[in-house]
Amino acid sequence: MPESAAAPYERWLSIAVEEAETGRDEGGVPIGAALIGADGRVLGRGHNRRVQDGDPSAHGETAAFRAAGRQRSYAGTTMVTTLSPCWYCSGLVRQFGISRVVIGEARTFHGGHDWLAENGVEVVLLDDARCVGLMTDFIAARPELWFEDIGQDGAE
Ligand SMILES: [Zn+2]
Image (cartoon, rainbow, N blue to C red; front, side):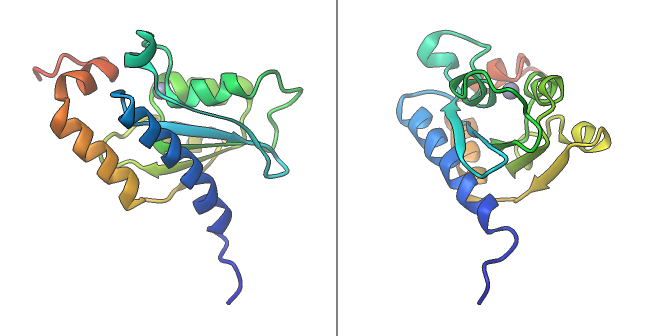
């Protein structure tokens, strides 16, 4: 059987899932990401480090983006992330002209991916059970940490 069109996306998502699992095992927020070059090469990968570094700006996507270093152009690059990107990370995608966002799931958090799609970014939503499980377990175990991460007080 020929490789399905979604196959590279699944491979890339597995890198983001590995990062999310590392973050979980470190006691952090289990969100991981990778920036993939136009040629399919992994430019950078990372995970949310809010807890580990005491840094609320260290999201999975920003960690992957920073790990990739300076790139001449982001045309043709893909940000793959385990969870629908928040506004901050959606802004990063548009600021630098990242062409595509591959998302593990948007069930537990609906970020800015509709806005990205409306503004010319190719959005691929995989609805991956591993990603849903990572977030469902985390939100059940550490609700206060999750509401802190998404900038809500949890009281609403
Ligand atoms: Zn974010």
